[in-house]
Length: 136
Image (cartoon, rainbow, N blue to C red; front, side, top):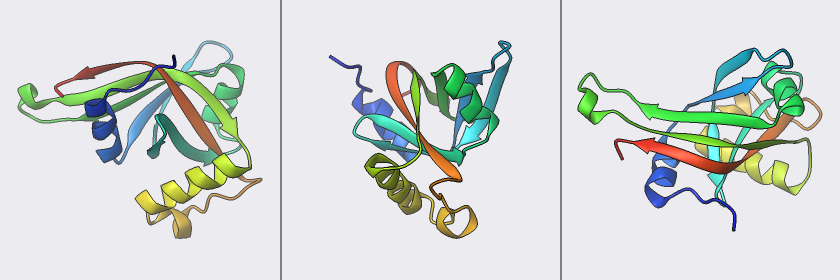
């Protein structure tokens, strides 16, 4: 049976606007960047330029980490979820279009400011393998 994010984790993730994606390059150098995600069917998706460093890293090593968090000066209120999983680069097709539509719905500025176009952009799908949550 595939790993599934727990209800509170998934609800928290869906409410976040930005996550931090960690990948590893071919020389073992870490790379960490913000991404805008959507959750569909227990999987996480984000868009990227096809030639970006994160996509190059994922093509070499599909193991990734996504961190979603809320900071508060009162540290008893810190909340977050870290998801470890396997990423797949999707260049076209039904999953590409479904994820693009979901991203456009969640992030209205995407369509006009950074259109997700086949051939220029890719969708990255992350299948969670485990997670760690705090403060939920």
